Length: 237
Image (tube, rainbow, N blue to C red; front, side):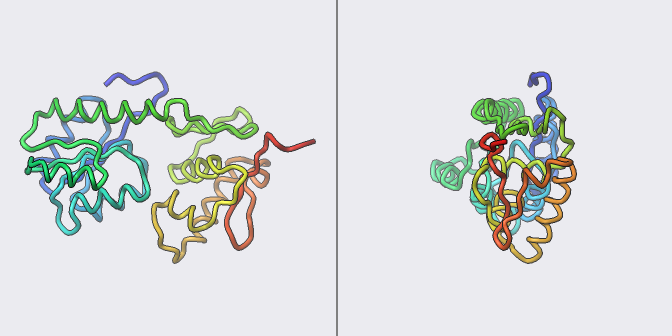
């Protein structure tokens, strides 16, 4: 896969409990320019998804514990990351069930590694094409969503994945209050509230530090509710 200058290397999460299959999928994707992370169960995959950014999920339908379809539905409740599902069953009903769960494409085992890689490329290309022009601007803040970068007053910000997600969510909802619960759902992909506010406060503090003197102006605390990013282009001297 040819990357455009400045375009980040795509990261694929491979979810399968069979090591040999994981190795085949990893090799196929890596030869086409993907970086890969792996998980052997739905819970392990969820941990990866909530702790780092991934561009694509390659997901086996049959997993220990929760099924691949269960995991796909869980992913779809919080994210539109493209999902390519693998299965040993190729019946129409199986494919329909996978698509209804939210899968974007389906590959039946045994498969050609090259075909798998090409399908993964096509999914990623469609996703990036949709997001290609999505740059969020608010005064001197520019958030490049597909590139996962941000600048403030022309200065590049060096943010962690979670800081970048938080800034993106606030910028996307500029002018509106984003509640604690919505931040947990959209940034941390969880509905669990225990300890959630402290986690958000810590990340907001770090993000404000990155922004320097503009931090308090850009991210406003709404007591008892959440945070607000004012529309800076509407400010008057």
